Length: 157
Image (cartoon, rainbow, N blue to C red; front, side, top):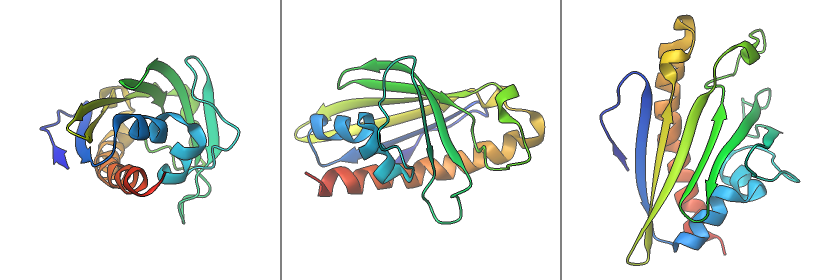
C-alpha cells in the first residue's frame, strides 16, 4: 500500500492485488460482493450510474451506520466513482444538508496483478467542525478497506 501526499481535500491510496483485473473489477462493482469485503449489507443492490446504493454497515460497532452512495461513473474494468457523506456516523447529525465527497476507484493491470487506486476528494466542503476527523478517519479507513478488497479478491473465486 502506498499513501501519496494528500492535501486537506483528498485522500489517495493504492494497492497491488495478485488477481486479474476482471476479478478485482467484480469485487468493486458487484454490490453484494463489494458489501462483503467493505462491511455493508448491499444484497439486492446494484451499482448503476445515477442509482443510490444503501445498506446497513456490518462492521462490529458500526451497525448503526448506513452505507449510502450515489453512483456517478462506471467505466467497465477501469473506473468506478460514487459520492457519499464521509464519516457519517453520528445519528444526531443530518448529513443530507452536506456536500458529498467523491470516491473514485481506478484499476491498472500489470503482469497478472491489478493495481487499485482510490481517491476520495471534496473534504474541503465538509463542515469545518468535523472536517479534520472525517479526513483522518477516511485516511485510515481506506488503508483498511484496500487491505480488505485485496484479501477478498485474492481468496475468492
